[in-house]
Amino acid sequence: MTPENKPLIAGNWKMNGLQSSLETLTAIAEGVSAFAAKTDTLICPPATLLRAAAVISAGTALRIGGQDCHAAVNGAYTGEISAEMIADAGATFVILGHSERRTLQNETNGEVSYKAAAAHTAGLTTIVCLGETEAERKCGQTLDVLGRQLEESVPDGATSGNTVIAYEPVWAIGTGLTPTTADIREAHAFMRAALEARFGAEGKTMRILYGGSVKASNAAELMAIDNVDGALIGGASLKADDFLAIAGIYEAI
Ligand SMILES: O=C[C@H](O)COP(=O)(O)O
Image 1 (cartoon, helix red, strand yellow):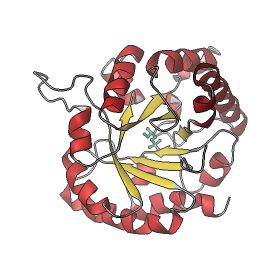
Image 2 (image 1 turned 90 degrees about the vertical axis):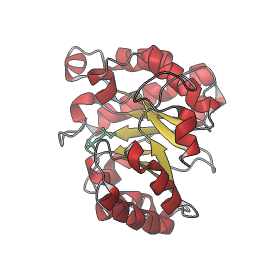
Image 3 (image 1 turned 180 degrees about the horizontal axis):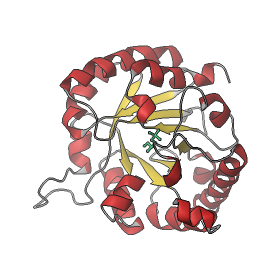
Image 4 (image 1 turned 45 degrees about the vertical axis):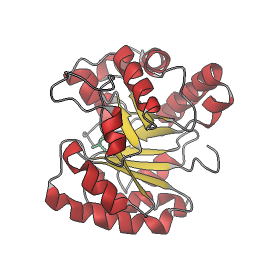
């Protein structure tokens, strides 16, 4: 990480959040200012809340992001949202390649890379998600899977300023399960080496988040692991107190 790239605590609301949820977002936007010196914070709400969330967070330390974007600039893609539309709404980040999309939408590494390039063109910072399935882990394929996903999902124009990596073991998402500290250390060290080999100094400082059942109870242990530069949080980001408890973790590390 670099001084301008502090650890990042990001919340992915997934398909959760109505207009009434903006009260929670307001509480988060107000609360993260206490941690802004040490920690970057981000909430990625559903697209229906993006503009309102950007208006609420304007002038605060909280950043807003989308959860996906189309690779095209515009056109006949019913139901899709372009990177430019996310930026136009006032967001500055976008999550791409989340396993729930890779699995449910059969999203490929190549599609993620094209989307990431479009997001960079629109001025967004991408959070590119990677992770092995339980079957791949049991077959000892974790590092092979991560290496291939890194190589094929991250476009050549990636820098530490426009790209964040999120390692999310698929079997740890929403399950309450996490890999061992040793397994997370090994995966993040492997990804760091792969990023440095491909992107040089940019790869050395590109942030690598951990995601998968991060809670206030385990965040300190997880965030203290080498090459873990923050977290991508699902369930624990839906309540302000839960998210702020994790966002403040670097105050104590
Ligand atoms: O994007 C967030 C990840 O899917 C983790 O979700 P979770 O914290 O509910 O396990």
